[in-house]
Structure formats: C-alpha cells, structure tokens
Length: 198
Image 1: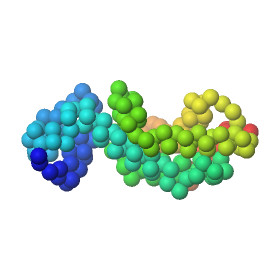
Image 2: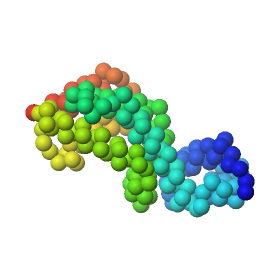
Image 3: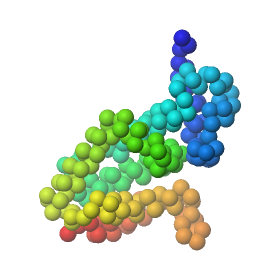
C-alpha cells in the first residue's frame, strides 16, 4: 500500500476547488484534475474512491473550516446584537480570507452532495445547536422579534452577503468600484438590527 503524500493531497484539493469554481461539476473530471496536478489518475484513487467521494471529502473539509471560522470567539450567550455582529465579522473575515473556498462551498451547498456532506460532519449539528440556542436566547430576552427561520436568515445575513458579493466582484450596482469597509458593514448592520429588534 502506498503512503499518502500530504503535499500532493493538498495540491489535489486546491486544484479540485479551482476547477469546480471555474467549470462547475459538469466541467470537472478526475482526468482533468490529475493533469492539472501533474499526477496519474491512478494516484487520485489512492486518496478517493471516485469523483463523488472526492467532492464530498473536500466539501466536508471546507464546511468544517467554515463552521469553525464562524463560531470563533462567539457564544450563544452573548447579547443578540453583540453575537450577531461577531457572526458578521467572522463570516466577512472568512469570506475575504478564503474567497475561492467560499465560492466552492456555495456550489456544494446547492448540489446533490450537500446533504451527504452535512450529515457526515458532527460539528454541523453542534453548529446548528449553537445557532438555535443563540436565536432562542434572543427571543427569550426579547431582543429579537419572532419570525420564520427563512425570514430571519434573509434579514440577519442577506445584507452582509450582498456586500461581500460586491466586495468579491470589486464593484457594486452599475459597475461602481467597491471595497467593503468596516464602516459600510457597520452601517448595514445597524439597519439589520433595527429590523430584527422589537
């Protein structure tokens, strides 16, 4: 049995993310990936059973990285405003630091692989439990108005992700150059808090 080469494995992960972000699942193949990594296709099968296994394992690694980054220095016992701001900061920092991984994670999230990946990650249930406790605390402490989860998520995070998309593209509406600053983020956050608080 051949020993796994961590550098080679990281190269495979990096190239797989690049290809899926650039070409989607339709344009992605094990042959193209092996060629981009200058390795044989057989070498890929040392690390992964097949293409689906590769996508799911890489998706799992990225999801774990995202969930860990999101809850950094965050506690569900924070006041609603403080906790939501920490979420915004963490999500913005992660997106700016790992734009390609975030683009890959978005593609994965809307694919048939999403459920398999999320079900295989114990930390995902922990993450959901933490976020549920945070929202429950906000409701109990009358810091948040009751609403459906989908409406809450749209109002709580929609403005942030719109700004992050502008930032990633480097332009806002009408092609105007755009860079997300803490001041603009804070301005959008204040409007968000106003919409969510009783």
